[in-house]
Amino acid sequence: MPTPPHAIGFTLDPLDRVSEKRDDDTFVASLRDDPSTRFLLFVNNVPLFKRADGHDPLFSRHEAAAHGAPLQTVFLGRDADERALFASSFDDNPESLREVEAIELRPIAMQGLVPPPLVSALGEARSMLDWHRRHRFCANCGQPTDSAGAGWRRICPNCKAQHFPRVDPVVIMLVTDGERCLLGRQPQFVPGMYSALAGFIEPGETFEHAVYREVLEEAGIRCTDVRYYASQPWPFPSSLMIGCFARAATTELTVDKNELEDARWFTRREVAAMLDGTHEQELSAPKPFAIAHHLLKAFATGELD
Ligand SMILES: [Zn+2]
Image (cartoon, rainbow, N blue to C red; front, side, top):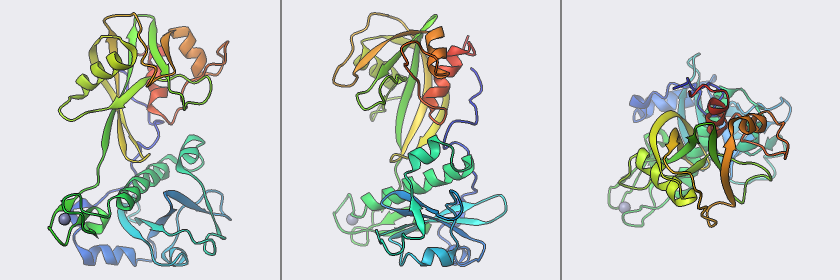
């Protein structure tokens, strides 16, 4: 199996999460008040950047305070220089947003506008803040819950249930048949783009079973020999992409048009042209920040063989 490249977006975790000290309130408060500490700020799941300094998302405690009281704060961890990083979400406040620029994380990651380790930290922050935003009530009894453990769990004061941030596993698989591979396109993809098939893992499934089921459901293809390649945190809102290769055992396609606009076999040469932007019909592949790009590339370059 080829070695996964570091260019896969959101995979360069720069932080020591110090998870064993999240319940130590004195420790967490001392980091929060340290002048060297920096804050990633979000409004409605969108990160804020300083207007004056390119795409700098690191705010001091003093700069963060200009946005008022945060809705939620999460301790993300400490970087290699022992500098602590927190993430805070705020209400939409046009007054305090004058000095900053709000830019969605997806284009930031896709265009490489901030260094890869910071993209990973922004992804971690986005997933955590979005989880708090959508889990304010106890799933057990319906009462409002409180944040605890430096933002890494929520506790219900009524029934005492504890709720932990969730990660949804997704399999993304490139099915190959010798010199060709199976790609599909969802209706919401940019025109001309094809990618590896993907789907959520269901309760009770291994990721191998999820690969067999999804490929059969979406394309009518039976596959075998599922091999794990690499994984990628995907913070929209909080998935873990599990990248796999599989071999086709049958080749006649029956495309599920509810799921896919199209699916077909592509030759190795065609995939190489899609990756470097020279395809005759201007078909394209996902960009390098997505794990699908690297699955396709490993196939196109023959690394898999
Ligand atoms: Zn409860």
